[in-house]
Image 1 (cartoon, rainbow, N blue to C red):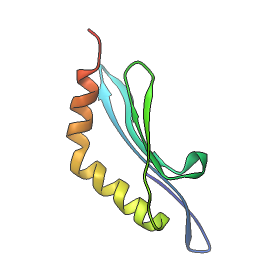
Image 2: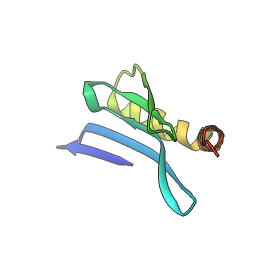
Image 3: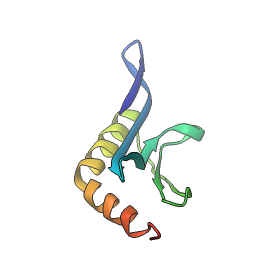
Length: 87
């Protein structure tokens, strides 16, 4: 989690779910405001990512949404990622 503030005002958000796979830390899902808009990147084992823009009324709402989604769905994201690993 990374939150950037300026004089107490939220200016940037980044939440990322990572897990250990075969002894290595791997990023699986990231929420951020890079590219000028709030979005979710679902990272894939082959290096691709699925980007989805998410409309929010404020960065505070965006941060709350990202945190809650990762708390609620981290297992689903991990299982999906593991299912896409080519063995």
